[in-house]
Image (cartoon, rainbow, N blue to C red):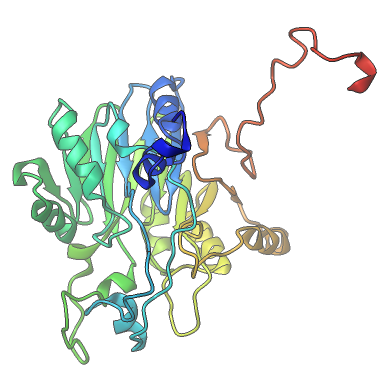
Length: 354
């Protein structure tokens, strides 16, 4: 834009959104995963991108949506899980807190689109539209029954969708997807509009949500979706080898139990027998934001007495984690830059100014 007279609200949006532009898209495309490793990127909320040595790319819960944007609407929509859970009616003030680090319309290659469940911050119609229009290969959309129904409602062809339930496995290149039981009790109390479910036996969780174990040449990644803590994590830990586990962490408002707490994250990791546990989801909603260093402090307090065989890794949205190369890292920091400092002579009046 050359002058302020040419600037409009629309030009501002197009010039600033998404905030990272195609930076991360390009990073993922350029990444060459070394044999025996697996690369993953946190895209915000529970969105995860996974890439293998054979250039197999999958997205899990990729979402490019928004939270509340106006106070003019005063009440939650009928059937909202939070309204059903605690009997509230006032609009949930879940403003989006984290930036958009990936451009869904700039994705050039993906081998499968996965969803753990059908809540709005775990599936994205924009991304689905791009995949259908611009990805030449007819890659599958994989999820539980309610997710598949959502994709079909958006216009994704039924023959492109694969409905999974716990125990199902799908192989793609050098990667294997294993669907496992979900413990997302919030999803169980989500209804389609006004529906009285008091005294009614809950619907089948397997139709609403699943967890995933992603088996890769670099290790196995356990994605728990929006699961609450469950003692059945121990069953998954006994039946499957888990290297890296992701858990939805957050500070639950009074009257609501929707995210795992810091102690739940540690209990999940211990039960799954993983090597690294990574909290996610705490970043995105202003009313559920939490400080993940609480997990580290609690871990340090308990690790010796309970002889933990894992450690937490505190990630940043948009960051890359390569397993097992980065297995000993405890926290992430984005590239600080300036690695080429003093490659050329400084352009300053004199050296002592530095």
